[in-house]
Amino acid sequence: MKVVRVIIVLCFVVLFMSSCQDSTINIGIVGDQFGAYDTDKAFKIMEKGVLQLKDKSPDIVLHVGDMLETKRGIKSFDDYKKNYDTAISIMSEFDCPWLLAVGDHDVVPEGFQALSKDRSRETWFMDLIKTSQLPIEDKPYYSYSYKGYHFVVLYSMENLHTDPRWGSIFLNKINSEQIEWLEKDLEANKDNHGVIVLVHHPHWYVWQNWQPIHTLLKEYKTRAVIAGHYHYDQDQGEMDGIRYLVMGCTGGVIKETDQHTASQEIAMLTLSKKGIENVLLEEIDSGIELEWTPRISMDRIQALSCMLDNLWQDESLYSKNGVLYSSSDNKIVEKIDLESLVNPIDLPIKLHISIEDDALFNSEWLLDETMLGQDTVTFEAGYRSGWANYSNVGNWYSPSSVWQVDVDNTKLCEKGSLQLNIHVSFEDTRRREIHKTLNYYISQK
Image (cartoon, rainbow, N blue to C red; front, side, top):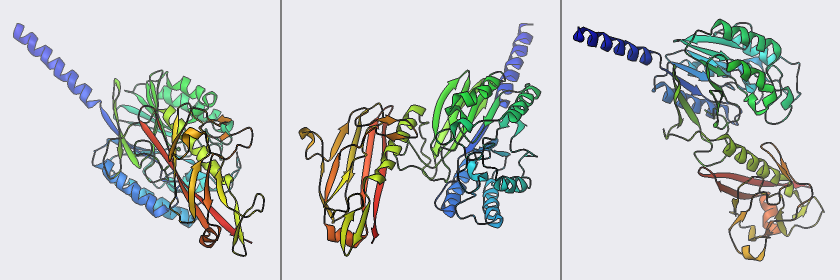
């Protein structure tokens, strides 16, 4: 009898382990291709990423959106369809089902009118996507059950030309009709191992817009919500058992940063009945495993990026009769000054400006005497900053110059432009860097 009992117990153990093993699923994730400055390059990176991910044998693949482009280089439906055909052929390399969240670059029309009524690009997308294997019918949101798991794909562009990080943030939300559909879909498919939600925009950046969705999802074994759009990866962490992730790019333009802060990448999420077992993020080509960047780190990088983008306003130059002048006061230029360099974040930053131009010389930081002659300086938290967040950095007053360089007026006038290379770094969970190549172009009068 004891032998029989042991055999029965062993059989149950084997069946249990087999059941657990069978319920594990590997989910591949592909990031944005657009916006991009070079369509061909974006698709080449996408193809490399898809083949790299295919080698990992995913059970299903999620594409976070912006697979197409509606504006840059797109003059007609035929142009749009050409991009569509290319993208579909690349995604068809997978030997498994794949799902797509519709992104802004897939459907937005020309112009930047919030709540735009121009649905022409959305119509293009819906007409074409019905020829694919995607389970999309009359709406750009849908769901799909596979291997015991339920995948919900939401549509974040019901209100065109809105965004959760800047612009019309209050309008960037899921509307009531889609919420009603979501509630019915979750209830009808509640007998599953777990739910994964895919959406292009990280709506949770404006919590009051996302809160009704989160309240629903937490009642239905939702394991993760995965978005894209920001062109950098980000880990928001868990809330009510739901992991919030933002996927980086697989071809789209990225910030010039250190490897772990922004790269061209793919991801693989391993899911079981218990929840998320692992989320691997991997750089395309090198295969190096990357860190999922904490949201606070990426918000800091974004604020620094906004600060560096402000530098365009520090100089406006024109030449007349072979002499270089400043547009602000029409005086002959003898020095280039930077005023908009500030520290918008809560940690010290280090700044370095390099010059590779023989028309510029004798650069210096205009700080206290202890910093004279230093190539790299430190700005303490909040230094010279009036206001700052992840979408806007500015000042309440016109700040004084903080850095300057002497100019050979004749040489610079002949060159037609000047270039500065600015490097900023800080330390949080690791060293993080962001770079800016600053170009001032000289107009002719």
